[in-house]
Length: 205
Image (cartoon, rainbow, N blue to C red; front, side, top):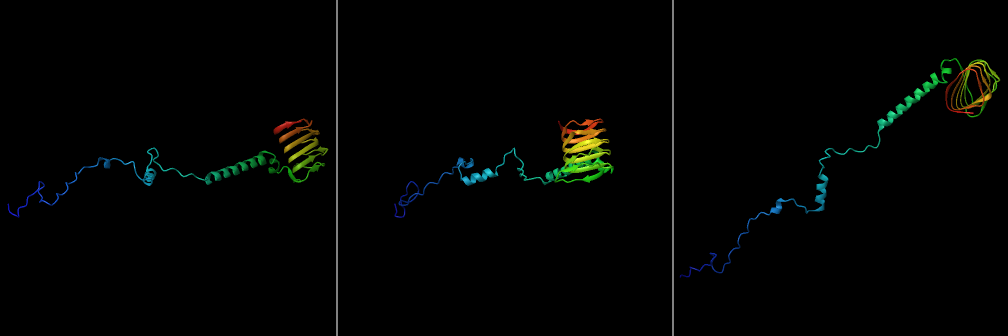
C-alpha cells in the first residue's frame, strides 16, 4: 500500500476527520396546527373585544338623555287644554255673562275682603277674592265669581255663583233659578223657588 493511499473509516472519511452529524428528521409538529390556548393576556383581551355574539348583529343603541320633541309635545298639549278650559269657562261657564255683554263686569279687591250692601241697578258680574253680598233686595240678575264668598238677601232674578267656597246663608231667598259652580257649597238653609243647576264637588251644611 502506497503512502498516498490512507485507510478510510466506515463513514468514508479519512482517519482523523470526524464524520458530519446526521441530518435532523423533517418532522411536522402537529401542535402547530392546533388552536393555542396559552398566550398573553393582552392578546386574549383583544380577541374578546373583537368577538361578536351571533344573536347581537346590530350595534347597541346609545342611551338618550332626553327627548326635546316629547317635552315640546307635552307643552303644546298643555297649552291646548288650558285654552279649551278657558274657552269653556268663558263661553259655557260663568264667563258667558261677560261674553254676551249682558252683564256689566265689576272687579273687586283680590287682597282684602269686600262687602256689597247695595244692589246694582242692572245685570252685573262681580269678580274678587273674599266677597260678602248682603244687599236686602236684588231685582236684577247677578253673577259672582270669587275664591270664597257668602250671599244673603232676596233675589228676584236668576243668580250665578262660582267659587272655591260658596256659602248661602239662611237669609238668602231665590225666587228664580240658582246656578252654583263650587268646590265646596255650604247651604245654611237657603230658600229656592226655581231650579238649582251647576256643579258642586262637595255640598255641606
